[in-house]
Image 1 (cartoon, rainbow, N blue to C red):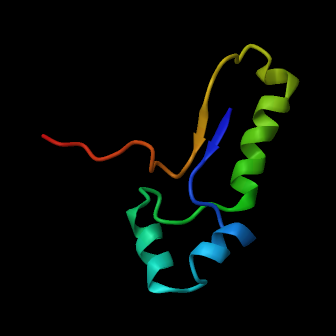
Image 2 (spheres, rainbow, N blue to C red; image 1 turned 135 degrees about the horizontal axis):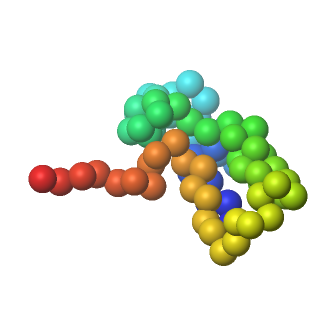
Length: 74
């Protein structure tokens, strides 16, 4: 399974206006500091399709820039 985070697609732009404060705030909360691109998700699918990845089974690959990690509390 490929589990994408916020990715800049037409659907995304239907919810978050381009170049808005909301877009900037969302990107800032993602550990890698940017929103996902379609190519980020495509590369994850290609990894699973590659015969060299044939020993990888039953996994979820989060393509989310680290946003699935959550916040650590001490």
